[in-house]
Length: 473
Image (cartoon, rainbow, N blue to C red; front, top):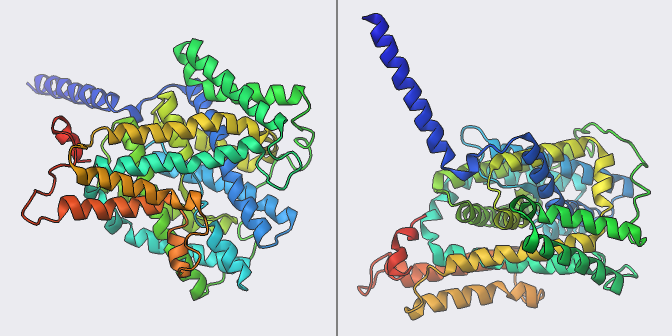
């Protein structure tokens, strides 16, 4: 009899395991593609975000007057920490990590505040100290911040995702023109032509390539563009072999952090902005992957964001956030596995330890990245438009919500000086069109669709009748 019970138990156990495997298989972010595909698609993610990853430490280093050697250390540390943060976000453990295909990297939202701290007499160590304290503050408020997810129906998320893509397009344009406005070849025909060749090659691959080729179109177009640039003398790879081939992390290489309240308060405001933008990115990737992103998952993602940010200063790096340009890559390639992005994190860790590979990728001309970025960033905006298609525009209030939210989000892009006469805290909060759109869409949606004046219910009018079930994230 015992043998029969054991046999029955084992049979039921195997059914449970098969059922669990089938359940996991239905969730695209948990798909295992194999080592080769993980490496290939992961490297594509690295190329997509590499320019933005090194931009923030470069701008801050130049803005506060660091030496070239120190700026080099900043960039190397940023690459390493981005890899570790990506691994935490994609693989995760209890309470930390969304387990979504999200690439992490140095946040550009904090650049202006960090430069302002340095310009107002604060030391580099005080910037690092402010990041540590504000990140701990972010970990504490993350669970409360994530509760607002129920106020993110398609009318809100669609507006945010659309403005994310629109806000990134100027980055692609700057890359196309050369990346450095002070360079003599800024906007030259060579730069425009190189970006155009990369873009056309990407379009041809998308049109005529097989399914596998289409998924690799971004990576292959960047490689092709780099080869063309080298052939015409527009790329310089001579510095790749110069310098150390391997460099271990330099813990507290910039000295002990210093804690000053003005700097800490400034960075706490930035933390709220980063939490807002990361929430938007998590919701965006959830829409693209077609998986459930509830307040618990958002809280885990935000805590991973802030934990990485709190530890980053010990390596000499800055606050981390979700990289929205890689959200576009997930949308355009259809590769939704978080293990692909985790592999990208591993590649970044290797690049952070082996600067020679970092120098190789950094040698790829900006116009090449810009040509591919035009498609990537535009696809994020398209994802937002697709989400907004669920909204019922027969209600005039819904049209007003979208119109005002997107219009307000364009203000920093059209006129960066628009908020210059307002308090510094307001300028920090509204420097990003993403933050403005998020705030406006939330407030207007609350006003029109959640405040019950006896005319409509809380959820009425947010989506088309056939899509009502999709209204709750």
